[in-house]
Length: 94
Image (tube, rainbow, N blue to C red; front, side, top):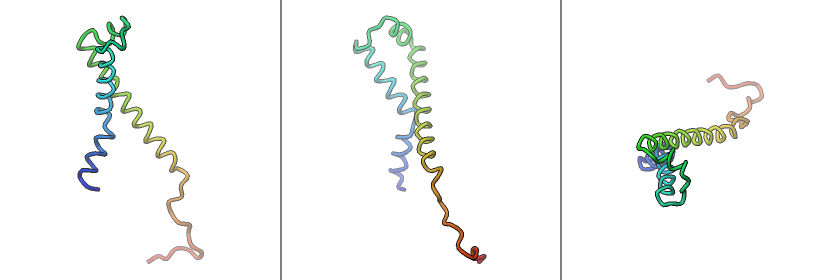
């Protein structure tokens, strides 16, 4: 695997990247006026500490979703037979 592919894979699998992107979109909706509920603005965008809390929540949820995806991917391969069956007469010790 080339270094560029490894870097791309690392970035795509990064919960910090996905959490930051989700929280950015969420706050863009709030500041764009799409989400105008008083309670949402008050409790999720009223102070800089609340911004940090929402970003940390989004990063945590992204990490959990990425781990759930890994779990599903690994679960599909549980029944797969990775080794060949033992040949008749046993294996060659050499």
